Length: 156
View 1 (spheres, rainbow, N blue to C red):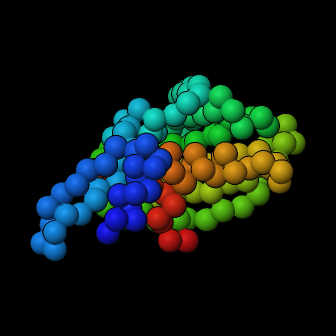
View 2 (view 1 turned 90 degrees about the vertical axis):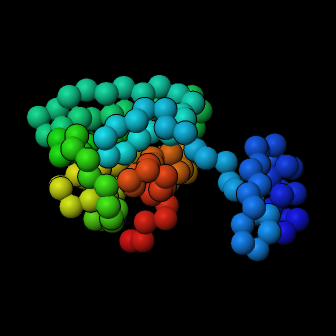
């Protein structure tokens, strides 16, 4: 029991201790939504965020202050995400695509709930450094009824 407390304190993270049925239980720090939408949110982010309306919904561009040198992470949000989606989140699929300008991107799509809400993520193919893009997508986007689930936990 001392190990999680030790690591949380070592990392300088706030630590919540709760009294559970088997004694004290540590709680991980809660990630906050910086931009909260009906069906999902963007967690606290160190960089720039731009949004524009598109015929099929909205297009978000996220560029971190460091690490996203090849271009922004692009999120395409379907219009149906404006309604409360909630429920099950599932991985739809991933691929490599080519834009109209000829640029190649990785693509990964997730369905949120049963109302047709889908988020498609695109990031430039950069074999040397695509970790910041994946980190933002998997850990910086929160979904679920309480917007408390990160995409890394969604089984492919």
